[in-house]
Image 1 (cartoon, rainbow, N blue to C red):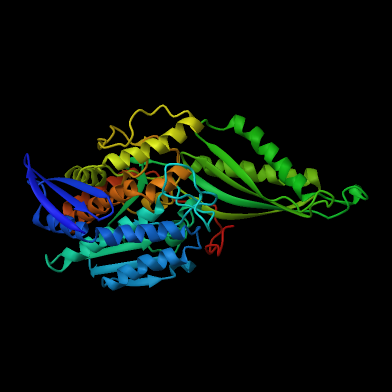
Image 2 (image 1 turned 90 degrees about the vertical axis):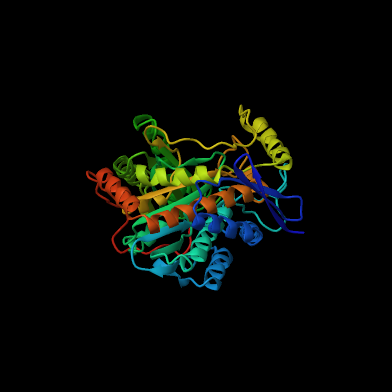
Length: 493
């Protein structure tokens, strides 16, 4: 049985929705602060909540890797088309990328959607580790809810657009392969973001805060060594081991770490290392991520790494070829836009969790405590952080950064995971497929919807965001190590 009750309590509206399965979501709103159009969007999102939860659960179960998100992308596209959005699929030569549009004219406000999963993270929505049958992948970063929240926000904006005679254009960008930082980069090269007035984004997390922050720039590259196969015992002198080239390169990179900034990161996996010990490997490959807080540092580290690869090839008497997969830039913060997001975040309020949510979160935290020594005392975060006095530095990378180099950009994270949960973990897969993730997702959809409409209606807010953007970009120039004209890869693994 589905029902909606509205209670006036201490000057607040308390909206409670039962979905008939023991799951309860609650929303507190300051009635004085919500405009009629905002109330209409919140009411609409409450009404379609079961549909959005079902969408999240479908994409969560699909758990498709980057550039392979055919069902996930189609699920979101189907919803947008049914709602009347004009959708262009397969943009930027990526079959799972899309752009959906509603309205016309300026301003043009974008909302970013992601939907790729991660390898080796299969998990049921339970408090104990239990891989889901039939798949090895999982949404350890919560992108099932990310894409769903973005689409939900767009539906809410469309719901009020014609009724309130809004002007301007709303776009939803379906951006694949965020986990490998590919989608938005190649969509940017295709010119798909450059006419935006402002861009909004959301990411599930374990806190409730606005992204007034930066992130790490990153270059992703595969180095393929080629040698000569031979019998490893009968004629080792005839062989030239490509694996030796890879191992020598890795040794050089590990020595390199001593002489780069503490905030920089270099990590790799060997994707090909030979097939059996008694055959000298003729081909071997290593995949590198090079990160730093500043793109200029990434470029310098990458140039050094290329020299190391060349040296390893000479030492092993092999040849090396390099293919750059992507080149991601750090996030450029925007203070005026972040203030608009925070204002609406406080109107909606943080996710409100019940006893069942806390029980599941405690189970998940127990495993994190055992594996990682978690010291966190809070179970689920239920407060909203204020903006810091200056942008904070995030330890991760995101291709939202590339968008932010051309468009004023801001967003939010909501509590969708147990407090203190590590990123890319099975614990996060469990949480995002549970009512914990659903509640964080719905808060995000509401905040994005309110913020998008604010920007469609308030030309001054857009102007202030653009002025802040121009100020921060004054001494920056966008450069990339990716060869000119290179197309997005068809696969990454």
